[in-house]
Length: 191
Image (cartoon, rainbow, N blue to C red; front, top):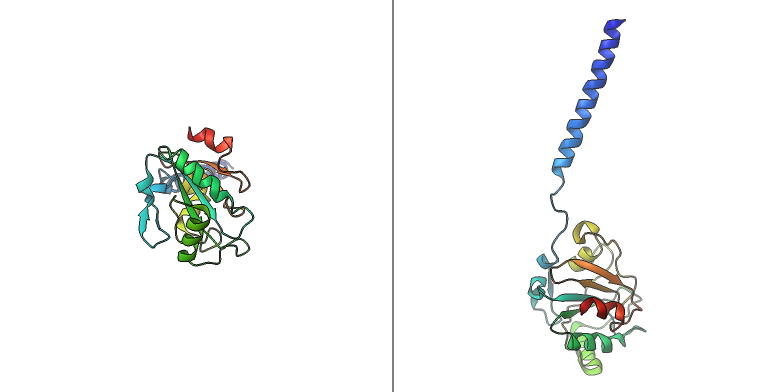
């Protein structure tokens, strides 16, 4: 009976040790810093020029998925106002997308013309991209993946969803599409 008892105790100790070794090896495989830098991402301007997000380092960044046939399209007015009024502290980046009810069907050239002619947009616009689904652009993968941005898992819920990134490339807030760009919730974080 003593041998059975000692054998059972030995098996339990062996199983515990193997479990600890397996858990430790899995722990060692985790990256030391799971947060990917926003500044490592590139995008193409609406005119096709490759732009590194690192070029905006040192300023806050407001990333917005935009569309020209949306009920919220008039937000271009406040996005431009925010960009001009706080240009020393923030850059607004517009990413046209046709993902929500196909409200941005135009070509990049037509989008650029529409924004310039109708809203005098001077803030950076980028090529039309996907902001949801399997083919979403790397910027929107970063914005909606907590392993990359540190906390947020929510992608855009509609056109004009806004994401605020601080001067060091850290995502600090996600704003509803209906929240206007010049709202105190956004402006107070810029000042």
